[in-house]
Amino acid sequence: MDNRNNGTQVLVDEFKKRWSAAGGHIFEASGTDALGEAIGQAWQTLVGPPDNERNRSLVYWVNEDLRHLPWDVIFRGVGPILAYPWDPEADIRALTTAADLGMTGCAWAVAETGTVALAASKETGLLPSILPAAHLVLIHRRQIVRTVREGLLSLDHGVLPPILKLVTGPSMTADIEGTLVIGVHGPAKVGALLYDLPMPT
Image 1 (spheres, rainbow, N blue to C red):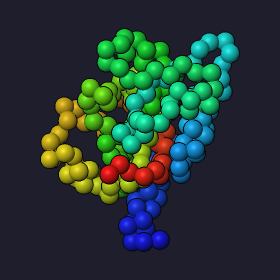
Image 2: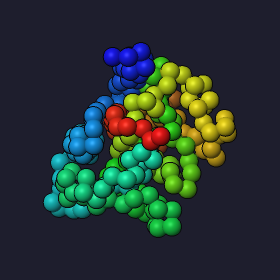
Image 3: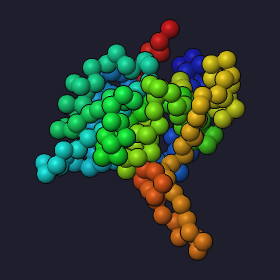
Image 4: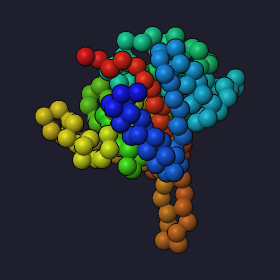
């Protein structure tokens, strides 16, 4: 293993440890063929088995290096679900509110805190990470940096997007007596799918 891969593995291991400690689930895929299987495992964990009584659905967008994949075929392998790609021209708020799962890519992830950064744009909306009861984020292993500062410095020309959302585990809130409630202001279940595919050149 060369030094670059060794360094990447250290960051991956630290991210997995911190993300899990915050209440998130970890899934992994090496290669395109394993990606569909890992998404199926994530669906089972975050949403549950297929429900023949009603249509289950997800709203999604993915990282640029995954956009060429046949997502309709991949989702058919997961089960009888309705999959809606992110489209700001559609009634996306209603679709996302009704979805069982939101699936997104990310801008980067932080090893030392187990945090994922989502950058808002026309192609990468934040609603799938907010409105459904479960959120799955796809992270290329080489998107993991050591600190938040390193992530901010990796942005194009150091320019911040209109909104940058940082996620560390499921949504949690507590009342004045300290009673912790999960899933009030966002997803109650979150998963990170770490994948390893050739990065675009």
